[in-house]
Image 1 (cartoon, helix red, strand yellow):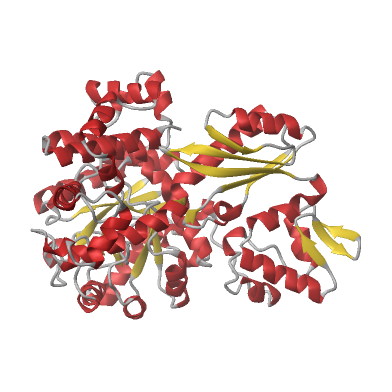
Image 2: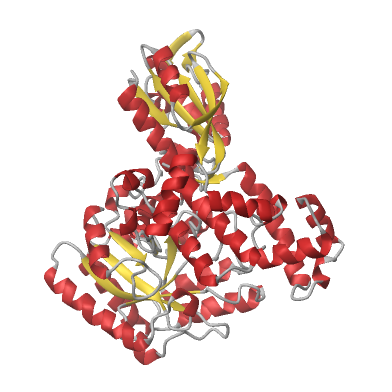
Length: 578
């Protein structure tokens, strides 16, 4: 899929136009188009072939032609022209979180800085803070951004790489003689970021499989080629990621899958248990002396050392071995047990889908209900909904729910927690909203005490049900804001309020560690895709993966409730909060 590649070029065009001081509406058109294309779960190339590009939100004839040019040539003439006008180093600087086009331009014009190292040095010497409109806080944020940028180079968000890995395995299944095939490594464990793609296969004709691998259109470079292992670099947007394909014997399939899934720490613990029983475990099998006693399936590998099968998401050496030995492994929430989406945006704020389209998408995904939580009135940049429009939305949801038996919409709102801790709608409005999920979108630079108190204030409010993306982090782009999460968890548990696992692949907030801490305190968790484009509703599985990594069971996740049960939970919480 070339979606990522097209989106990246459009984002860079927007940034370069902003550096030039171009028309803001033109800049916004490219940014919006990039967001739409990046959010697609269908292949933009297929849409182009079918002549459907102009059906996408915000894509007119001009942008459609530019998408076709990128698909045809791999670049865009406008982008290439802009790169000639703007020093190439500024493009690199734009990838540093916290450095927008205007700041990049000001730094370059003043200091002529041409590397990340020079920029870091200038910040540490407090030269940047002296620029008009900057200051010490900006300098501090740039240093944090450089740190994030360097971390990002090594690892990529799961939501970017998982679809690529799945596409490759599907092609190999259909077009080469594989018997078994599985993604392994950190992708299989569903870590939020991944370094590479590991794929295991069994095949009676491995040379044909490997030949197919190196012939894949996505392959940019062949690192090593062999019958049992081939390593390549595959295209992932405008960059590449390493992929290792290994062929193993059928009777070693389970052992190899366990070994290459990891994690390293989990595997060490497994090998230690094996040694205590006089056994040896490696990627080829389980051995007693020279005799192989297990290895065909993961289940028999674990059974050989007295353990039940441990789901891949738990294999991080965070107590799963001890729990397995005691027969106390959780029965993890299943992906198909998630029947609701707790956070979707519509055209009433900055979403691109109508309520009807959200309903249709939910039905296709097998969901029973969706909470439509548009931004509240003060968040103008995100099309915050004024009170008058809010009640138009309420009436429309009621009309649609009367007609639909398969999917119900829930009248919700993502209500801003303002800088002083008050909420963005008055109580007389809040009480009419079925589901209030409060969130911080501004004032990220406040102190830990201020931000913590803002969230606590919202949790204590009798009309609030939940808090969205509680730490505010954006993977590879923005660190969590300063917040005392322990205090947040204490208050949420005390008042019975829910916390969100935001399933958008750049957020995944709460993360697995924090979600587990919430689960252990009995705090209800709700998974929301935070979808602004209709296809982003498909990210629900990423939120479920976080829940599974957090040891969550069906009872811990509100999305497993039926529509009626969830509505009753909402009403009961408010009744108990009075």
